[in-house]
Length: 292
Image (spheres, rainbow, N blue to C red):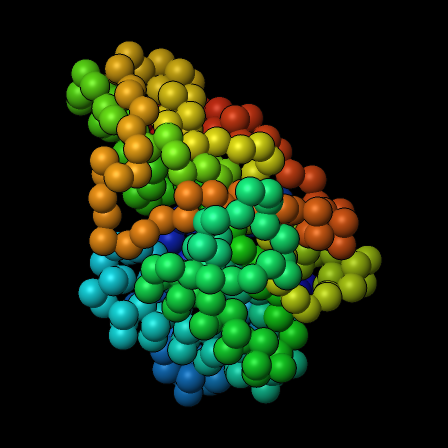
């Protein structure tokens, strides 16, 4: 039995891992969140990991309030960078493997083709800068670490863009949605499956745990406008959605205007199959409807 610690268990990705864990009978997963383990306290992590003899740590904890981070840089740094370093140090001390989840916001968004893992990182927001710092600190610790960058995460859990567009679409007759920011919506359950598949294949010896940076998002490309149109079509919402430019919807933190990720590396190294974003969106909305 492979023992795994998942931090940020109450978040989207943590809940998504929890929702599919029963399909992995050889994995024993312990979920924690701030109320049960403070990952900003390295002594607490060390004690908890040592006692439970975990073989893998999956860090799903993050400060994700992108705009708020502009005025709460210290807190964002503490959670997105210092805590990641803590987990990496403890992982190394306990012969444990770390899987850390990062973001497309480490890029400036000025590319014209999908980003590969080795492309220059130029984050333009505090959120992006703190997430990049977390990546760097994890690798500096010399821990065995897989760092997965993802984008536009949504699920049936917590608050996210899909749920917001369903809510607003049913409350309003018209919405203006940004069309000049392009990326890929990613269903958190798909990312959760990729993470558990990697753990299953590396713990069994079928695959080698290869430290490094990997990109994972669903297949395909969309703007926020395209994404919204599809959400409403699938949910059967009748709302007039108008495309607007980023400059018409100013936010404290700048967003990458292009953040499509190239997933060839994770597909090749770990034989990961990735669904198209539209198909995954249908599955998510079906699940949301089933819970209502």
